Structure formats: structure tokens, C-alpha cells
Image (cartoon, rainbow, N blue to C red; front, side, top):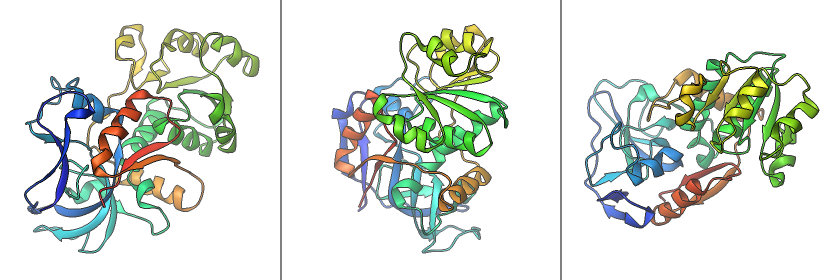
Length: 306
């Protein structure tokens, strides 16, 4: 029987268990994957803690994860897009912290051979989120974008996608991540007290837009630097919605094949990088979630079932 990470009650990562689960069967319009890697996202530990139970109820025992990269091992009735043995990446229908998962072919794209499994597993959540928020901010060539937590999962994607669009990017991050951000074409600065002055020292007229992937209280400074809340977007500061900023809510398992394909092409062409901050076996998925919750990441975390 395949193994999967499950929890029977909400709580800390200590409640996670690796258990045998019944084999999955691909229904009509579905494929079953052998999971090679699963992306770890902040929403995963929020689900585990029960923070999302009002808007995203799940039956317990339940599992975690929706970002997936793997090999098609079974094809359901009516599926023509993929065949057994195809290597794919995208979003799963069933929890991806597991050896096996079901997926809708419409939420998958072929994995380029040169893209490592661990990197492929990060694209559906953080990659598409970064793609979407840049579109929501209507950021375009010649503008200046400030990204908070620029070295984190979404931030790493967003700054590179923005630079590829011809945008000037300023990114807040710990000093240990500044050199890597510079290699992406980003102008790094430290976060914390005095942020407005540090930004104005290199961009006297402020910025055109702000992406907040941090949630450490930068919204007032961001509104000041952007000349108002209209083009300030946060992924985490839901309590600041009444300020007039945009708040982006990522849909679990949502995936745009076009965005996924374009991002995969950029990675394969060497124009976009996704550093992997850590890869964890199923039995250490709890450690991955604890690291994710702690913040200050430099890249993405993944769970590797095999």
C-alpha cells in the first residue's frame, strides 16, 4: 500500500503520521501519479493548525499538499493529454505529501527533462501565485517594484519574472541573501526600521507598486512609498484589507497551464532559478512545515516521498 502523510487532529507538526493508505484509482478525466516531489507552501501549515477550517473544511484524517511533480502511472477514461510514463508537474486533486496522488490533466504540464523534480514541484503554487500577482499589480516595463521577502518562495519567482518583464526591482531580504538577489538583477535592501529612507536613497520618488510576501508590518511604509494603497498587494496581511490595499488569496490546487508552461520554459532556458532550501522525506514533513512557518527562507522547501 502507498504511504502518505496524514493528521487525525488539528495541531502542530507533531500530530503528523506517515501511514499506509488505500491505493488510488484514476477516475474519468483523471490521472494517477507516482509522486517524485511535493512543494511545501505556507497554506499547508495553516491547514494543519486549523486556521483555514472555516473556509477550507477537510475531513479528518486528512493530508497536505497540492503542488506536485511526478510520473503518470494510470490514466482514467477520456484522458488523452498524457500517457503512462509521462513526467509532469502541476497541481494535484489529492494530498501530494504522499507516494501517489490523483490529478486533473488540465492542471498539469509536461516536465522539461532538464528541470529537477524538486524544482518542478514548486511551480504550481509559488510560481503561479507570483505570475498572478504581477498581473494584478499591472506591473510593466520601466516601472519600479518593491518586493518584501524577496528571497522567499513567491518572492524569488516574482522578482525574476518582473526583471524578465523589464521592471526595476527592489527587494527586502536578510543580508545573507543580498548577493543572490543581485544575481537576479534585484537591488536588495534590509527590512525593518528605516525602510522608507533606505528605499528613497536609491529611488527618491518611491516606487510604482509593492508586493508584500512578508507580513511583518510593512504595509504603512509600502503605502507611503507607492503614493497610496491602490498598487500595494499583500499575500499575507489580511488584517490590512481595510487600508485599501489588494489582498491576494491563492486558490489551493489552482493552476494555469499557460503560466506553468511559460515558467517551465524560462527555467529550462536558464532565465529563471528556484533555489531549493531543503528537501525532506515523508517522515520529516513536519520539520519542513516547521521551517516554513518560521519564515526567513532562502528558496523553496519540498517533500520527497521516495
